[in-house]
Image (cartoon, rainbow, N blue to C red):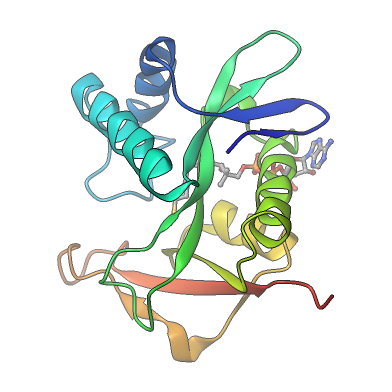
Length: 180
Ligand SMILES: CC(C)(COP(=O)(O)OP(=O)(O)OC[C@H]1O[C@@H](n2cnc3c(N)ncnc32)[C@H](O)[C@@H]1OP(=O)(O)O)[C@@H](O)C(=O)NCCC(=O)NCCS
C-alpha cells in the first residue's frame, strides 16, 4: 500500500521513522486523548513493527506519512482491522496521529481522503469506521470533514479505560463507499 497526494507520501514504515514518530508519541498534547497517554521509544518501535506485520499480512495498514517537499515524517495514518472490543465488527478502521508541528495545515485531511479513496477503489471495501473518545474534538472534526457520520446508537465505552475517566466514552463514525 503506497499512496501519493499533492504534498504527502503514505508508505511502509522504515527504521529511520522510529525516532521522529517516538518524539510525536512522547508529546502529551499529541497523546492527550489516548489511554494510557505517552509512549516510550520502545513502545513506538513495537507499534511500528506491528503495523509492518499488519501491512504484510493484510495488504493494507497504518502507514508512515512523509512530506514530499523535505522528506519529514509528519506522523502515521491509515487503515487497520478494528479490535474485537468495537461493537458490530469486524470493521476496518481509519486512524491518525500527526506530530504537533504538522497540525492545522490540512495534512490529515489530505492523507485521510486519499486513504479512503484507496479503500474504495483499490481494496473494494464497502465501509470504513473511525472511533475516538467523545471529547476528542480535533479527531471528530476531521471525521466530519471526511464525510463520516456518527449515530448515538453506536456510542460505546472503551472498557480498557477506568470508569469515570473522561476518555472512556467513545463515539463511532462510519462512511460507506460511494455508489458506482
Ligand atoms: C486529529 C488530528 C490528525 C487532526 O489534525 P488537523 O491538522 O486538525 O486536521 P486537518 O488536516 O483536517 O487540518 C484542518 C485544519 O487545517 C486548516 N488548514 C490549513 N491549510 C489547509 C489546507 N490546505 N487544506 C485544508 N485545511 C487546511 C483548516 O482550516 C483546519 O484548521 P482549524 O482546525 O483551525 O479549523 C490531529 O489533531 C492529531 O494528530 N491529534 C493527535 C492524535 C489523535 O488524537 N488521534 C486520534 C486518536 S483516536
